[in-house]
Image (cartoon, rainbow, N blue to C red):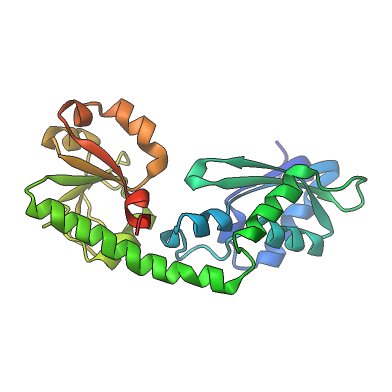
Length: 253
């Protein structure tokens, strides 16, 4: 660990840069902290993932930028850094960890960077028209969710949710969802329990209460948690209930 303003051999930014309004200044600040021979690690939710999976509701207030490997490479060049290696992870459907060093360091970006940049370009990360498709994803996804909820309600099925996440707020509001078709959403955070989803009358409950209600289906608003919640709340499937990936439901249109 180093003190405020001191240099370090490794500086890791994990989804922090996107929350800074002054992107150029924030990146320069991080680069300036790198000691000789050090490395800057930047982890980001890939714009390519957002486009591929139609994750329009990942774009929200408090986020000033969304990155692709080609775009971030240009940003790094402006502070005299260059990408060297890249790793991908399944978090959020696809995140990237990019390692960068000062441009004066010998060597070129390895194959992991060049391959990833090429793949992302092929997905249209530099094409405004491709990014604009997220609007139609938003409309279609919200309509798909509402139609599914209405059908389940008409069939007499009990549907609850899990994961009172910020990304769920825009989806529920766009879908016009309320407690008549989605009575409650469980969340493990005590700070959220006993409240409601913003813009709706949908209650936020404890996970134990979710199991007690024995729903026919549970909408999972955080798909990354599937293995965890299946293990933590086995009563759902034991009673014949199903976990429904909201992202898959709203992108299959």
